Length: 248
Length: 103
Image (tube, rainbow over all chains, first blue to last red; front, side, top):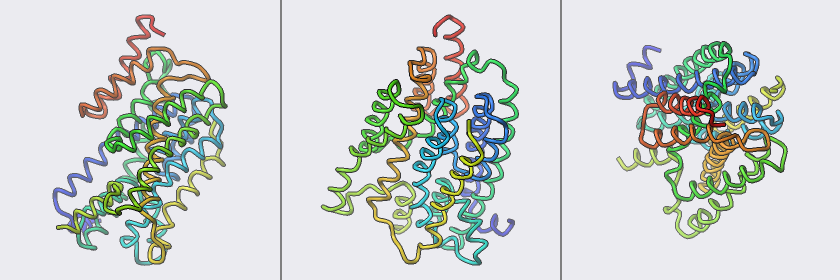
């Protein structure tokens, strides 16, 4: 651990600490919202330890708390986490070495660790950033979820405190930065309108999945751009960071 | 309710997504199109969760207090307020509106 710390620059260490702090607050909110919504304590804890992907944890719990089935919750979480697939390919070079280290490292792949690994130029620093951020986040996330869940379980009347508004509020704060891209925004808007419109008609849990029809509006221009000129395609954030490194 | 098998299914599936890169990274490459589509899909689902979570309860309308709170949170987040302030202000708005008798 100490050699990891020495490999990285001060600014990187500070940024990793800030991300841990931010995720601690999100984790505590997740624990509190899950427990105050009436889920048993082990659910948010098991999700955090085993799934370790905040967005999908919120999504799965959100679907279940709104009356949706467990299967709808799983499918929603899995579609959300499919974005980790490209991250895995992007940080694959960081995860070399013995097989057990690769297996552990894979569990630490998140938006945050991928972004930090890609900010670093040389392989040694990429590795240090990935592992330090990953281990720190894993510990911080699980501890904060546990504390949040215990605290949330003590709350009596959650509606009187407006806690039902906290769930969409947390997600909104998390998703806003990725709405900067116009095509993503269009797709998300169409999806949201569809989801709300079908809510009275279909079983709970399905509306959110039906929102994926919004992808039709994101797909077409991207496909055209990819075929016409590959440099017009807007890559996801970590890839952009990689390009910046390449330019430098 | 969230049974254990559902938690495990989600965990195993998520781990498979994570492990594919480190396992096959040397031999396979993902197209830019697929990467973009997966990233947009994640955003679409999250925004749909925000919309349904803010506006609906069961199969009906959630009442005005909750979406009003989420709106306040959204405005604060857009203005780059700190995360705790965003969440607390959202919940507080909803709580105060309910105290005033707004559904």
